[in-house]
Length: 144
Ligand SMILES: Cc1cc2nc3c(=O)[nH]c(=O)nc-3n(C[C@H](O)[C@H](O)[C@H](O)COP(=O)(O)OP(=O)(O)OC[C@H]3O[C@@H](n4cnc5c(N)ncnc54)[C@H](O)[C@@H]3O)c2cc1C
Image (cartoon, rainbow, N blue to C red; front, top):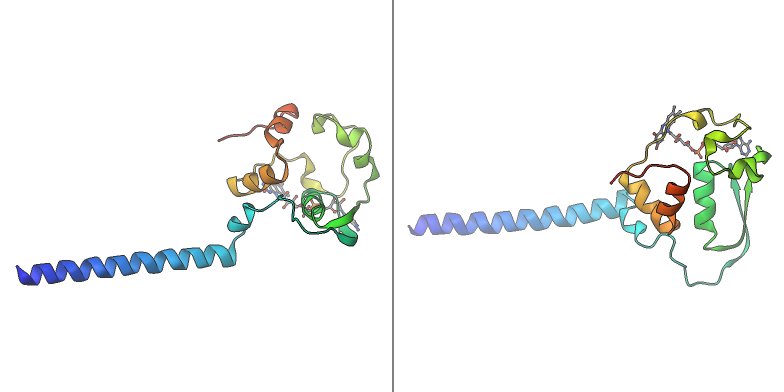
C-alpha cells in the first residue's frame, strides 16, 4: 500500500512537471516562431508620435496593401509604388472585383479563388474593424 502511494505521488509530480514544461515550451515556441501573440495588438494605435518620414511600399497587392495598413500606424505618410495605375481609379474600387474591366498583368493568381485561414482572418479583423460588413458588401464569403 505504501509503495503504491509513493508510485502514485511520483507519477503525479512527474506528470505535473511534464505539463508545466510543455506549457512553457509551447508559450516560448508560439512567441518565437509565430505572430499569434502579436495579433492582439495589431491595428491598435501605437500611442507614439508618428515617425517623420515616408514609408515606401513596393507592390500594391495583398502583402503591399497590408504592409501599408500596418505602416500607417507608425509613419506620417505611406506611399505604395504599384505599376498598375488603374487600381487607384474607379475600376480598381469596384464593389465586385470580378466586374473590373482591366485585368492585372503582374499577378497571375488574381483570377483564382482564394481561401484564407483563421490566423489571417484574425489579423484582418484587427486591421479592419468593419471587415465583416465589407466582405458581405463585396460578396466575399466568411465561414466560421
Ligand atoms: C493559383 C494560386 C492560388 C493561390 N491560392 C491561395 C489561397 O487560396 N490562399 C492563400 O493564402 N494564398 C494563395 N495563393 C498564394 C497567394 O496568392 C500569394 O501568396 C499572394 O498573392 C502573394 O502576394 P504578394 O502581395 O506578396 O505578391 P503578388 O500578389 O504577386 O503581388 C505583387 C505586386 O507587386 C507589383 N509589382 C510587380 N513588379 C513591380 C515592380 N517592379 N515595382 C513595383 N511593384 C511591382 C505587382 O503589380 C503586384 O501588385 C495562391 C497562389 C496561386 C498562384
